[in-house]
Length: 264
Image (cartoon, rainbow, N blue to C red; front, side, top):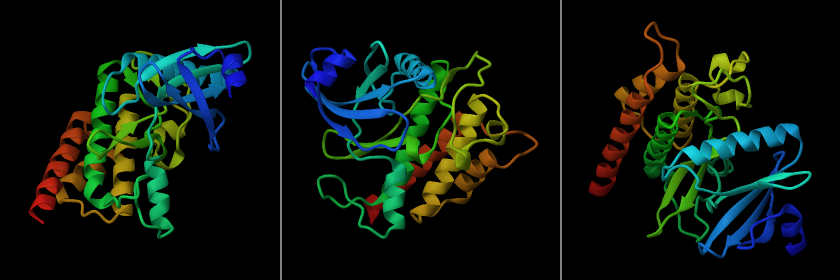
């Protein structure tokens, strides 16, 4: 691993530990940042397309600061590759969690503690909406909001929070970009037709993701929330709801669910 780290050109305070299994086009490694004393993920890409996506991701993360968006620690390149370092989400993705549910496996964190996804789903979605709002405020559109790009991580005190990751399909709001992939099941119709990402297409993807996740875990969806989220994925005369409205809807449902959990 030390030889690989030298070939990649990683900073001296980043120490590779092991390769992570991932079916994507990039190579992922788990590492340790000795300067900050925390676990990190190193993403390594090769080729023109991979480099373009990584540059988009680095530019976006450099502009967005939010607890539900990964911290950009470092970015760099060698002769035939480029890399980016972010903090590590130790609980996998929301897509992993839903697949676990489909297989009928017990849902637990990496410490063996059982997790009630139905109780936490509203909060996780509200956190992701907050991260997306921070991105839009910074002039960044994500381009591929989906369960696979929502990561879960343990926070101080033992809770599990959600963060919106993989800004490789992102673009600046003022760019007429056609760049970047998307997940068809959660992408807005205009994205599937080939249009570039936009704030509106991000809202569609967030609402589609929320409805999918909530239905998967069997969480009751109040009428007002279903109406707002449904408006995000169904063409209406007035257009899609604003991200602020969707964020308020998710936050309100999260607070309501938290109160009912406390009373129970």
